[in-house]
Amino acid sequence: MFNELPFSQACENNKQPILEQLTKWLVNEQCVLEIGSGTGQHSVYFSEQLPHIRWQPSDQPIYLENIKRRIELAKLNNLQFPVALDVTKPWPTLNEQVHSVFTANTLHIMSKTMVEALFRGLGTLLEQSGCQLIIYGPFNYQGKYTSESNANFDALLAEQDSQRGIRDIEWVTQLASAQGFSLVDDVTMPANNRLLRFIRKTSK
Ligand SMILES: C[S@@+](CC[C@H](N)C(=O)[O-])C[C@H]1O[C@@H](n2cnc3c(N)ncnc32)[C@H](O)[C@@H]1O
Image 1 (cartoon, protein in one colour):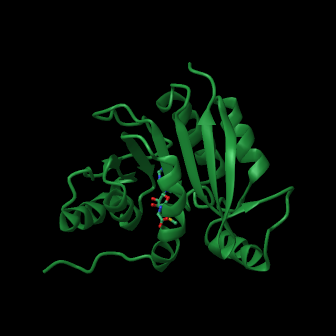
Image 2 (cartoon, rainbow, N blue to C red):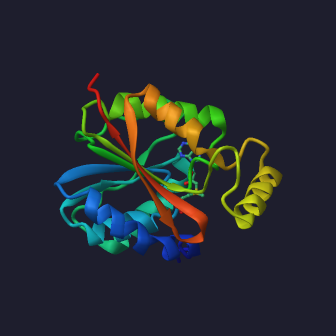
C-alpha cells in the first residue's frame, strides 16, 4: 500500500493568490521550470489552471518519488514528471527551452551560498531577454522584518539550521541584477509573503 502523500497547508492557502498573478504573467504558451517543487501541490494546481503552460517540476532527488506520485494521480498532459535539480550541482539538461522559472518558499530554506548558486544557474538557463523569474516567499526590507510573525518565523528557521533565514530583498535584487534581471513586480501576498517578478533585460 502507498504511504500518504506529503501535504502542505501553506500551499493550499497561497495557491489561489499566486495563481491570480501567474494568470497575468504567464500569458503565452511556454515551458515553466519550478525549482524546489516540494510536495508538488503547486505543480498540479498551476498546470491544471494554466493549460497553455508546460510545467516542469524539479527538486532535490529525495523529493522526486512523491512529486511523481502526485503527478500520476493528477493525469495532466501539460505537467511533466519532475527532474532532479539541486542548485549547487550541475543543472540538468531539459527537453525544451524554459522561458520562466517559478520558485516558492525556497530562498529562506537554502543557505546564502545555495541562493547564490541558484542565481548563477538562472543566469545561464534564462538566457534570452524577456525571460521571467517569479519568486514567492517572505522577505526583509532595509534589513527589517515586515511583521512580528516573520521575525518569529526567522527565529524558528535559525533554530532548525543556522544557514536558513529570511533574505533581504535588496540582496536578492542585487543577485538578480548581476545576471541581467530587473525587478518589475513586488506584490503583497497573504501571511506577510511577497511575490516577486524579475524580467531579463539583456540577452547573454
Ligand atoms: C519549504 S520547501 C517549499 C516547497 C514548495 N515550493 C512549497 O512552496 O511548498 C523548500 C524547498 O526548497 C528545496 N531546496 C532546498 N535546497 C535546495 C537546493 N540546494 N536545490 C534545490 N532545491 C532546494 C527543498 O528541497 C524544498 O522542496
